[in-house]
Figure 1 (cartoon, rainbow, N blue to C red):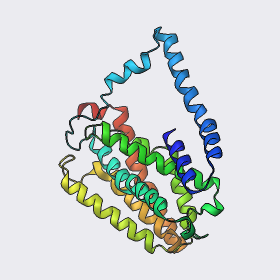
Figure 2 (cartoon, rainbow, N blue to C red):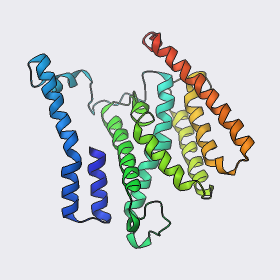
Figure 3 (cartoon, rainbow, N blue to C red):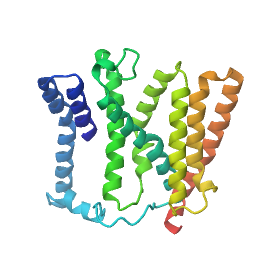
Figure 4 (cartoon, helix red, strand yellow):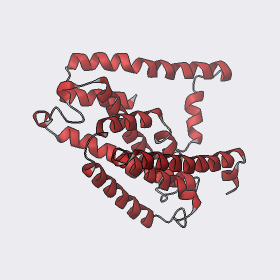
Length: 262
């Protein structure tokens, strides 16, 4: 809901009228508000208390006190969350700031977000970016430095695939120079972050395979339209095979409760 409201505010600044903004906010937040009160009602039916939803929050310790250093519940999750921060969340924030600062008259018709030819695809993309930003800021401000589940709320969310597919569709026939430059910048800051944080131990271990596979997959997607078909198919098979091994490892850890004993 925050992402939708933020997107509507963004569009109010850039294009739409106040009347259209108010209408969109009302219509598009109704499902969230209705679901919230439905959850309260369902929990009341089982517990006979209207405050069960709020009482349960006490056990999650989401507050802004005492930063304890960067940690996670597993090294695997730490690697994936690190990728999400530097390749998804922070770039999303930078891109939104860039769009806000860019003058409307300076946006060309070939721009990724063209407000004169605004489409539903643009709207979904903006919602995805604001969603990544809000999840990142919430984790940063309330988890005392623990990154637990950040990768689940980003890399495993439908909005991640929505944003990636829209982005790839836009950049499929574009030059990769700018994309590759941005990728290198993200990789450099990720390297600095991993070098500065003690949690996770040695970085060249299998627990960080998910992080490296995401980086490898991103590189493959950037250069995919520059590769000859046999090479493209061979790399695709290799990357798919490596990802199957990684996900099998995670599934086995889940089924055997491995992280509980680590």
